[in-house]
Length: 170
Image 1 (cartoon, rainbow, N blue to C red):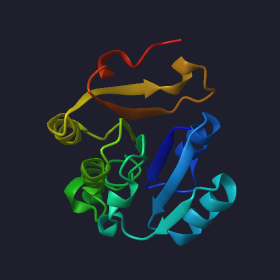
Image 2: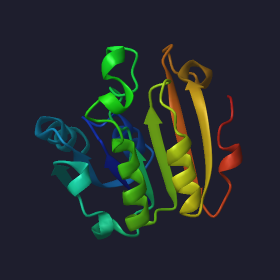
Image 3: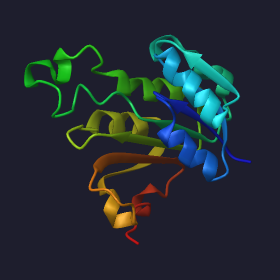
């Protein structure tokens, strides 16, 4: 069974999708204890980690197949007051913790989801530097048969190549 760890897990939106796809969720990491406890009840990962992702040693998960991550959107969201967006937001830069986790775990794949205003160039460059083939797309979920008008920026990184054609319309 393929395995995954879920960073910035929240209550488990990404994790549930991976569990339903047949993945074993080895760990869920989120700063909010209530969210990871809900995740544990609903999805049942092997381990939940409640705390600052910047303090997690990911080397214990070396060999996990996939890292999934939904970093906090508030630094990039149009719902956040303009004066607090970007570098002015205390959660700015947490998406770079994905690179640290990837460097320690060395998974076969990485998937990161974020709001449309997010600019992933630095993350993409870092993943390429770690030996991954990377694709990014602003995805309209309705194009994939999901009944919502939401759009999200999605990064898919594959170790050893092949990410170029991962986004296909149904």
